[in-house]
Image (tube, rainbow, N blue to C red; front, side, top):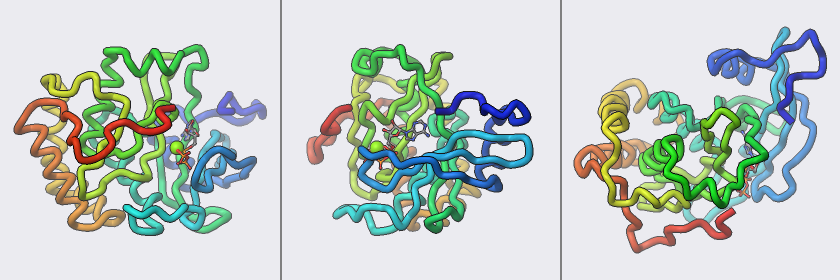
Length: 249
Ligand SMILES: Nc1ncnc2c1ncn2[C@@H]1O[C@H](COP(=O)(O)OP(=O)(O)OP(=O)(O)O)[C@@H](O)[C@H]1O
Ligand SMILES: [Mg+2]
């Protein structure tokens, strides 16, 4: 999946902007369903003009109800995670849009081809800058599900994160495998990004997020950023909530 399209007349998007336009306007051909996913998660190809790419489509109608998140809001949380990722410039979340599909509105995300050689169990323990940025990102979005399968190491050393349907709770719910920096100083470069993010959240980004999240959820996101900027430390497990995802992979 995700290889160069077989049709030689087609090409993969050259950058994130092109990928976003393709995801937004392209025609989606669904090819299959991820059987081990708990929500309806479909994979397919999206095409427009000479562009083509593999994608994931999660229709809102296929979301499994959860006790701690309002029904029908997971796709909007995925988009919100992408918008925050985009604002940081860290490219944690692959290009993601909200659009109509065969089963109604849902999130459509670029499929990214991870490096099959990487041993995830070993990888997630590494002191790797891409993972460390992801840990800061997760603290911002309050990610309740950063298990191993939601980390995709790329052949070039970058790491993508996927499955952000249960982020942005107003309660502390950070559940992740990436605790190795807990209590340690957030790198200076990341703090600078967070300063900018705090500004963005007070402006257009905050308004954009409010299309998908409640005012309170946006405000709590601002508060988590403010708290990171105040302590300048990676957060530690709260003790009130299981800190590790189960199963971990
Ligand atoms: N954009 C993507 N690129 C590459 N792989 C992806 C992408 N999105 C999802 N996957 C893969 O598909 C799996 C299932 O997708 P996802 O976790 O988003 O679905 P889910 O319904 O929330 O599943 P679960 O509840 O089991 O975590 C992921 O664990 C990951 O391995
Ligand atoms: Mg998942």
